[in-house]
Every structure is written in C-alpha cells, then in structure tokens.
Length: 171
Image (cartoon, rainbow, N blue to C red):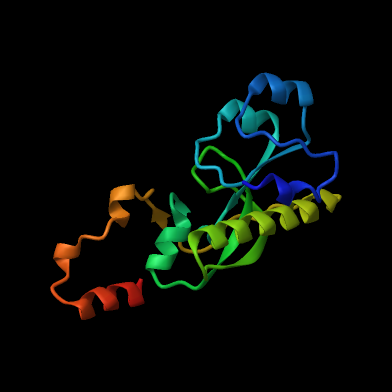
C-alpha cells in the first residue's frame, strides 16, 4: 500500500500493516478496514469489532484468492470493488457498498486504482450514520489463489510466434 494515498483521511484513522491484538484492543476502533488483505481474519476480531474487507470482484462472484488475475484471464475488463462485513465464511459476509473497478492496465495500475477506490469508499462508509448491509445475492463462484508457477510462460507449449501472440492477445 502507498501511505501517501491515505493522507487525505483525517486523524480518526490509524493504519496498521499487521494485526496486533494488543494495539487494536488499546485503540478500540469503531470499524477495522482491510485493504489488499489475503489472510484469514480471526473470529475473535470480527466478533468484537466491525471488520469491513475490500474484495476486487462483484461478490458473490469471484470469492477467494487472486480475483483480479482470474477475472483478467476470463477476459473481464471491469469488475466491482465490494466492501463487505467479515464473517466466518470466506468473502461471504453481507456487503455495504460496491464501486466500479477497471481491470485495464498493468497489475500495479489496477492495485493503485483499487487502493484509491477503497479510500473513497472508506470516506463514504465513515460518513454514513446508519450503515446498512445487504445479503450477497446471485451465483457464487470461487477462485483458488494462483501460485507464481501458474503465471510462468512455458515457451515449449507454443510451436509458433502466432500461437504465442494469440495467447497474449487473449489473456
């Protein structure tokens, strides 16, 4: 994450890169926001505090790992960024806000856009007097976290430059 992106939020926000229960207990936050978070959040944390996570798919579609990469491989050019309440099921909690997210550009550009969109969503959520959550409705799809080896190009697989070009063009 880029600390500079968070400067526009006021002093009511504290940023932690890691979950430290002692520090969270001391702060006693109203809401804990999770951006670019890929670890399981402990039950004692989301049972005690309102935990809102940002997921880069139109939940319930694309639950699970590596949603940006999977959607790009499925030729998606845009998706939603979903702010949802953390629950005991992976990416399955009710949502409070969804915003458009373009999947154009490099991975770095997409992640920066996701971060900025998350910040704007945090502003909207924090200004809301009575936060309302809606149940996720629709077909559920699950993505499995991609391994680095799945992104390696096996050049032996391509017997011509045209096939390699077509592979990149359709990715």
